[in-house]
Length: 242
Ligand SMILES: Nc1ncnc2c1ncn2[C@@H]1O[C@H](COP(=O)(O)OP(=O)(O)O)[C@@H](O)[C@H]1O
Ligand SMILES: [Mg+2]
Image 1 (cartoon, rainbow, N blue to C red):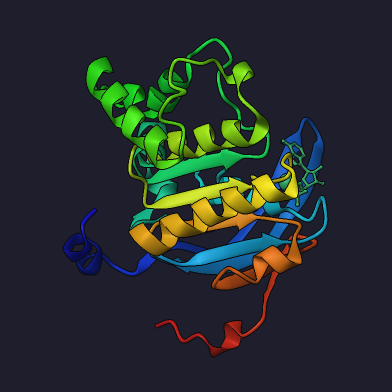
Image 2 (image 1 turned 30 degrees about the horizontal axis):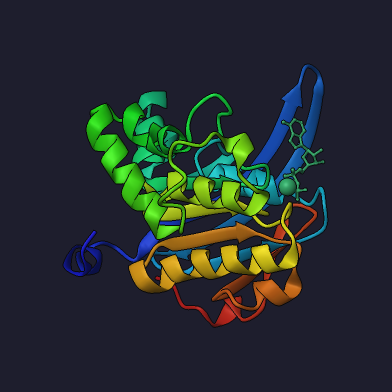
């Protein structure tokens, strides 16, 4: 996206209106998110913090259209997701969202370059074109010479860089990262954070990240605490949204 396009778009990227979410297994219902509202603007960096089990991953998956609200409304990029078909949701996910997980989630049998190219293949981009884009993305994360390796040949930090390259290859508007540095030593983690925050700074990518690290969260525009399925944010009342 060039800057002119960015300016012409609505600043609202994601809106949750009185959203609740429960998991249902047979007769058992687990309420997780409890009537939350949240507006995330294009280009913001948001840290989601909170104890284990508070609902952070559920919220992140909902922002990524992997979970639907049980109650309430989620508007993504101007589109009400309640009225979207499964195909439309999959398209939105593929075009607009890049995911980065703690466990990297690379496909072990595919080469690094094919792992990175995967989101483009799902879009129907030709293999040749997808590989050219994947190679460029690998260079951006400092792994230009590793394309032919398998995930098992790389260190944890390198694998997470591959996962970030895969998340970015389709030029998403939004990066969602669930404790992406949780499996990495502190020095490697610092490099991954510099990379993620740099993408926001240099390219205006919106970044929402779950982290346990309060110090790290302070580097984000917003720190949103998830406490027992509810959201708390310092200074949130000062925001005026009409
Ligand atoms: N697929 C699922 N089915 C049933 N319960 C789930 C599922 N995923 C998460 N939970 C429950 O939802 C609650 C919140 O989980 P989660 O969103 O993963 O929290 P966090 O990421 O903050 O640790 C926990 O009690 C968890 O056990
Ligand atoms: Mg989690």
